[in-house]
Length: 195
Length: 218
Image (tube, rainbow over all chains, first blue to last red):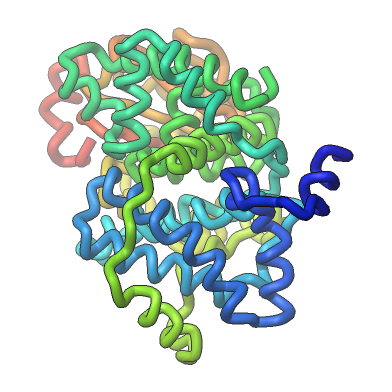
C-alpha cells in the first residue's frame, strides 16, 4: 500500500506495465457519472486489442472479432451504470460481456433457441478480488503436464465441448473430464481460489 | 434445496469458459441459482479465462475503428444489449427455476407433458447444442438402464431418485461419467421432475427402449 503511494507520487514516474494496467474499476465507476468520452477511450485503447486477440483465438475471423469488440465496448459504455465494483473487477465484467456476445453470435443462425441471457444469469457472487497475476498463471500453465495444458487450451481457446475434445484427442470422455479436473485444481490454487 | 451432489469441476470450468453446449449450460445455470459453492468455482474459471486473455499478444484494431467507436457513443441505444437479466436466488413465483421461466413459464403443471412410457412424461426444450428435456417420473418407476455416448447432466427439481451412484434430491446434479450404465428410479411418493441435458445419444441396453429411441428424440 505504502509502496503504491510512493509510485503514484514519484515525480519520475514512468508508465510501465503496472501503470498501464490501472484500476479500471474506478474508471468504470467514474464513467457512469461523467460520461467522459476521453476517459472511455482510455479504456477502449487498453481493452480493444486484447479482446480482439481473445476473440480471434476463439475462432472469430478478423472482421467478426472487430465487430464484436466494438459491440462489447459500446455495451460497456451504455451499461456503466449497472457495473458494481463490489461484485467484479472491470476486466472480469468486460470479459463476461464479450464471452456472452460471442456465444450469442454463435447462436444467431438458430433463432428461438436458448440464449446466453438464459443460461448465464447474473450471479451474485463476489469473485476473488486479487487481480489475476498473469505471470503466475502462465507459470502454472507451463507446469501442467502437456496433455492437461492441451485440454485447457481446447476449452478456453477452441470452445470445444468435452465430447468434441474426446473425439479430437481420441480418448474417453471420462479421461477428458479427469484431466480438466486436475488442471483446474492446480490453476485455481495459483490464482488464489478456495480449495 | 440441498445440493449434496454438484457438477464435476470439469463441467464448471467449461461453463466459466463459455464452452459448455447450451443444453448443459442451462442445467448448470439452474443449479448455481441455489449453490454458492459452484458459483465460486465458476468465478475462478472466469478468472483463469481472463488471465489467459491478458497474456495474449495484443492484436491491434484496424485504422478507423477508434473513430467509429467514438461516433457510435452518441447513437441512441436502439436495442437492448445482451445482458443477464435474471438475478440468482430471486424469489419469483412458480416452481420452475428462474433461468427457465422466460422459455416455458412458471409452473410445471401448466406444461404440455408428453407421455413416453408408463410412468414417464417428458417436455422437450429448445437447445442449439445438445438435447434438453424435462422428465417427470412417477413414484417407483424405473428408467430403462442406459449409458451415454456424450456428457449427461441431470438436475433434480422436485422429488428424488436413486441409482447406482446414490440418492439425488432437489438441487442435486448428477454429472454422469459416460462409460457408466445407470438405472434411475424415482424413490419418493411425490414422483420426480428432472432437467436433463445430453450432448450425445443415450445408449439403452434393452431392445424396446432402443427401438423407441428415435420417437422420443433421446
